[in-house]
Image (tube, rainbow, N blue to C red; front, side, top):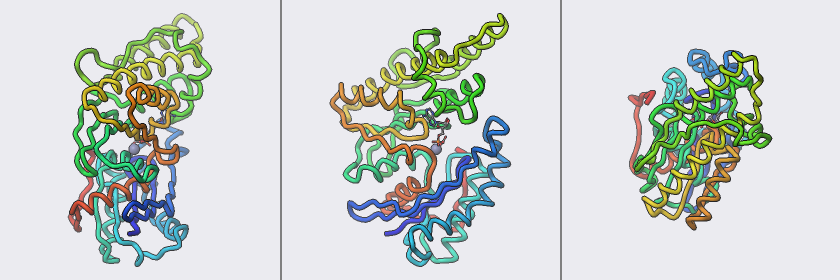
Length: 333
Ligand code: KG4
Ligand code: ZN
């Protein structure tokens, strides 16, 4: 079955065509129109501008996806569109476009949860991967551990109590003058610094919990930067990047180990934009090697927001009986 995936939850408009059949998963097209250059001017995503930019891009990139896949709309067996969570004005563009396209062309429609979509990116890379497994979503909006019980059943067993990991990386990146979004640049910079240079609090909450809190870490890093500025001292950006990344990596090591001990699952799937982070990928490899668990890492091209992952999850939702009508709505949460 050919599935058309549509994604517009934040600052990437994406249209993809994925072929899913028994054991077969093929990405025929995964077109991504990024708005990063537009939002960079403001140091973060401006929701109103995001919605408008999605409107301008969505038809063109859907056409492009069909052309790249060398398919017609009549070949598409399912339209899967991100319906939640995300920026409401941004989501509404994809949802309304998907609804119109599906109903005008008699294609079944299914609304997909973006976070589930991130996890489904792993099925595209590892065709033999099957639930149950431990799903770890690290993104600009989410930081959560899930027991993925089946393709469509998820139990959240830990999460951040405030900011997401990506938000924290982007915030510190911005304060030390890196272009938005700072995550990927901070990742590279951290390799050049000394992680012991600055003392920062761990984002892993103490005690018998798999939860994180990034706000204390963020505030501590901001105070350090401001205090240095007041004294007229220079912060070493590489050392700060390394120290900041270091406490996140150490906290992640602890919580991932604890999550595997608790669940006794033997497979870990890392997902979301922040799963591209080289330090966190290394931590996941080390934990999985120690615990003798299989680690499924999506390729970098499928870590960030893309519609191929939405198509993949849409396929499983549809197999499970989900089907949406013209009343499909978007939800911010
Ligand atoms: O999953 P995603 O594309 O969008 C959301 O669903 O939020 O994640 C975007 C986030 C941004 O915060 C970005 O800075 C971060 O992923 N990111 C990284 C890296 N690459 C992207 N964070 C840390 N290290 C990276 N290498
Ligand atoms: Zn995302």
